[in-house]
Length: 411
Image (cartoon, rainbow, N blue to C red; front, side):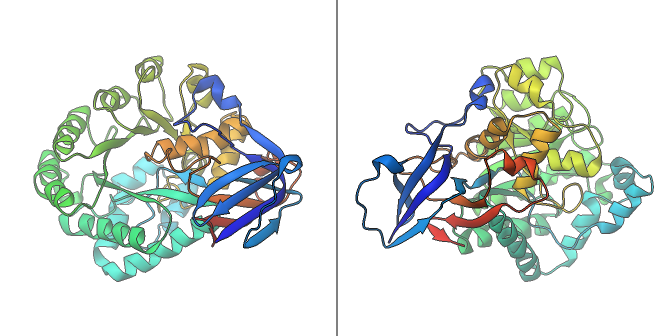
């Protein structure tokens, strides 16, 4: 089966030679072809070029993309899509003056979601999560990472990871799985948090590894959650099972989590709303991808990741949604790209690079996804007729997507 797109107004993120990521000043450059064509065979990108040089191609299907822009699907490297229920009451509580941390201290927040998930049958958790996954795919996401962390018991954490595995089996996009048992300290361990870390490391982690339920390990390294010592313990144990770190750091405080992540060769360090000069220096020359989650900042009214500080230090940056019931009940990567431009002062080129090729890197997918490159998977977005790619972040409340293709097939 072959598909030919012709008269594309502009084909974005075209990379003749594949790259793994872009950093610093490189992120200002978004290679494109105007008045372009794109050829797909089965599930792969085969060829592309300008309409002036198009050869004779007998495709099974041809789409005239006049006035439309084509770009790779978004690569969302940080989500918590698998959860049960919602937390709209806490949303109202915050409007009435309670902070996110105050709600958490009253047994709300992550602990609230964990209780709901523990009480919800696995098949129902799957059905709720599948709807969310389908929703984000229609919004242009073509690769996604999903974390556990809303279980906080052995049974519930394994339940979440089994649901992630089922999603991976039933949907054609890449789904990466992360074990985040150390997301919060359960109520019954409040006075003995070390005992909960023992449970995560000694009981749950071996089962996760034995059943092949996760590729990555994560921990919420933050005041009131898990310390640097906890993080070191968990990452050391996970290394023995071959799980790579992707860790939550610097959401509210800088306590040394970035440095610890780098020391343990973390694939990514995520959140980064609070960044010191030392945190920036530690990341230089490493393979660790900084990941910003601007829709979390929007929803919680907390600072935004200082993108300009990170990029001006010639570091890379990826963008992700943090889709979850408490701090970011949205998996809309289009909004994330807009917020990166509006609130983090990233250029449209930087934001699109961060949401495609760098997002793919943060899931170890940049060999196969994240750019328009021959041989890569045919995961791409066709926009409606829009004036330019800058219109995508500019028109933040408009759905500019006409169609989404995963593995060469329209969804």
